[in-house]
Amino acid sequence: MSAQTRAEDSEAFAEQYTSDLYDESPGVKLVLLVIHHEQPIRTGDIVRETRLSSGSVQRSLRELLDRNIIRKKRSIRDPRSTIYQTV
Image 1: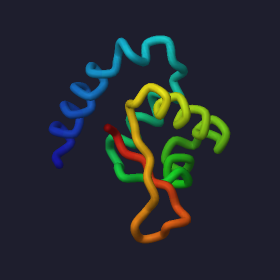
Image 2: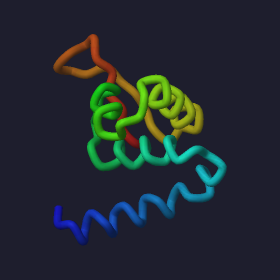
Image 3: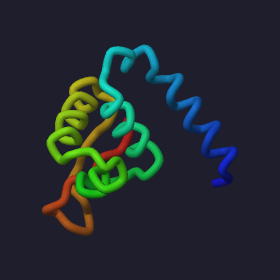
Image 4: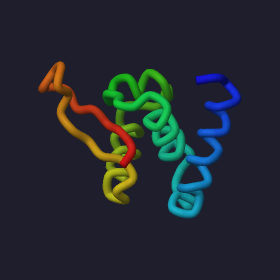
């Protein structure tokens, strides 16, 4: 995906969730953007990509799951691992 296409995709994706996440912290928005670009992605990878604490990432994931914006499932490669992707 070219840089321009990726930027346009990010902008369209952000517009879709702007009203839903208006009052949320920047961390929640950042976690969602990383999931959108890197999906499916594991929690540890989200922590590395965002440089947020594990606790902040967990809170953000819970908020996004509660709002049905993302979903989680077990990794096929490693059943001990949970992966996240947008709905």
